[in-house]
Amino acid sequence: MTTSEPEELPSRSGSVPLAVPDLGEAEMAAVVSALRSGFVSSVGPAVEDFEQAVCSLTGSRFAVACSSGSAALHVAARVAGVCGGTEVLVSDFTFIGSVNPVRYLGAEPVLVDSEQQTWNIDPSLVIEELHRRARSGIPQPAAVIVVHIFGQPAKLAPILEVAALYGVPVIEDAAESLGARWVGGPLAGRQTGSAGTLGVYSFNGNKVVTCGGGGMVVTDDDRLAAHARHLTQQAKVAGVGYLHDEVGYNYRLTNLSAALGKAQLGRIQSFLVAKQNIAARYDVAFQDLPLHRPTEPDWSASSNWLYSVLAPSRDLKDRLLVDLHEQGVEARPLWRPLHAQPPYAGCRRLGGDVADGLFERGLSLPSSVGLDDQDQQRVIKVVRSFFSRTQRASP
Ligand SMILES: *Cc1c(COP(=O)(O)O)cnc(C)c1O
Image (tube, rainbow, N blue to C red; front, top):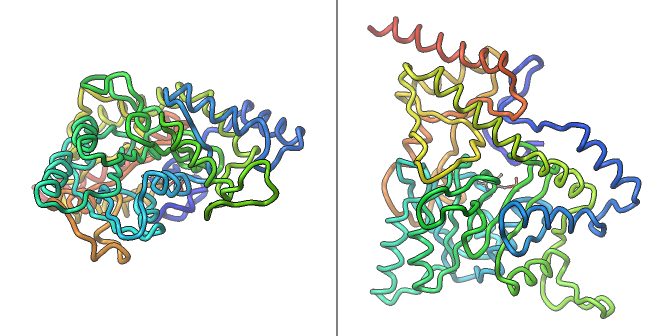
């Protein structure tokens, strides 16, 4: 269920999990009905229904269902023009799934540091780099990948503006931010994932909405959508016997998974409210503790995918994680920056050490949509008693 996630502590019985899905009667009925229909693989009505439902939610014109968020990003990057010999600007502070497709395509990532307010890619670093390349006659990157980390919308508008000036496609990795929106500024009213050239969602088991495993590419561009769809189905030319006009992938989502995803998507508004309430309760409970969490900007509405905070130091973060684990609470450090991952250690980097600081001091706490008050109080108690002990120990 959470196979793509590193840093995972083993789950124990009686533990409070980090992020597990809420699967109810609607999901059971949808999957059984898909089974009864006989359509279990990628042909079947639920796949298109799910795509339509994602279009309605996000406001995107086209959606292409894929077998994972990683597959969706691979296809999105390829149709955007990422290929051997090109470069791609990508957030440094993210899950490794945001960047692997760049290398699948033989391209070279350039890792861009975060800004403090949203923990997302620093727009001024991206803008400066695009202008610099233009001035110096250096080829522009084939794409910019902007991640909305932990569900918090990035400062995308200024990036879109300058990228458009130079014809650089912008891909939103909205794997963690389905349902998150901009509510102020130039993108007010838009859903994350729907504002760039292409956007990508994940329906992995720990994401806001799950279909077991799956992903989606969205775009308003009919040509890009058609190409993405073609690539997910082995680039098979319709109506001609087994003709494949380019190298494609077997990336189409199955009908069974799509049925589950569509049923889950029908409940997304209640999931978003639940996550917002969980975050608000943690905020209140930790008000007087030395935990830092940026206040959410008034121009965005996060999906609150994983409630995350910064401890005062690396040492306190490490000790708090141990305490939580010993008390049966699944907490996790924040993403290790890509530049600290062996395959990406040699990449060019833009910016400073914001991402390093987030990794050193940050942790995520249980944020499942089904987290009940009793379990949340258990988490809060462990955190509060940790700080009351450490503060007594160091007057
Ligand atoms: C989960 C995730 C992905 C990958 O999605 P999968 O469906 O697990 O392949 C990509 N990027 C980010 C930021 C993610 O959190």
